[in-house]
Length: 173
Ligand code: HEC
Image (cartoon, rainbow, N blue to C red):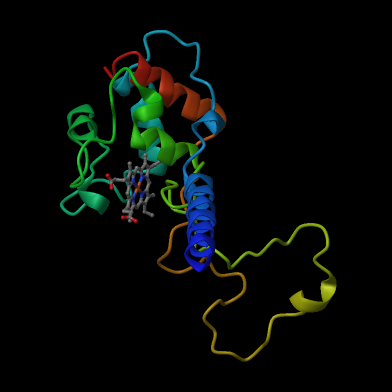
C-alpha cells in the first residue's frame, strides 16, 4: 500500500519536473521570420549591425566569450564554446537565438543589469519614484554625461534579426 503511494508521488514529481524543464526551453517559434532579401552577405549587410551593437565587446585581444564578431572568419570560427552559427540553419544557430533575445539567459547584447528599471509601466504609482535623494555623493551629477560608460548598445530590431537569419540560411557568406 505504502510503496504504491510513494510510487505515485515520485511519478507526479517527475511529471512536474518535466513540465518545468520544457517551460525553460527556448521557444524557437518566437524567432522573427527570416528576411526575404536575397544575397545577404556579412560584409554588406551584417557587419554594420554587429559594429553598432556587438564589436564593442566582441573584438580585440580579449573578446567576450572568446567570440569576435568583426570578421566573417571570426564569426564562423565561433566562441571558446564552439560554433555560434550553423550555416543554412538559422534556428539552430546560437547567435541568432541570442540576438533575437527570446531567451533572457543568452540575450545579446546583454540587458543592462536586470531588475533596475522595474516594470515602470501602468500601475506603477507615483509613490516610489519620488525626487532623487540629494547629497548622496555626486556620482550621477545632473546634466553631465555619464562618465566612462557608453550608452548600452541597442538590441537588434526584428527586421535586423530577420536579416541575420537570412544571412545564415543563405550559407553565411
Ligand atoms: C556589453 C558587452 C556585450 C555586447 C555589446 C555583446 N555581447 Fe555577446 N557576450 C558578452 C558576454 C559577456 C558574453 C558571455 C556571456 C556569458 O557567458 O554569460 C557574450 C556571449 C555571446 C555569445 C555566446 C558565445 C558562446 O558560445 O558562449 C554570442 C553568440 C554573442 N555574445 C553574440 C553577440 C552579438 C551577436 C552581439 C551584438 C548583437 C553581442 N553579443 C553583443 C558581451 C557582450
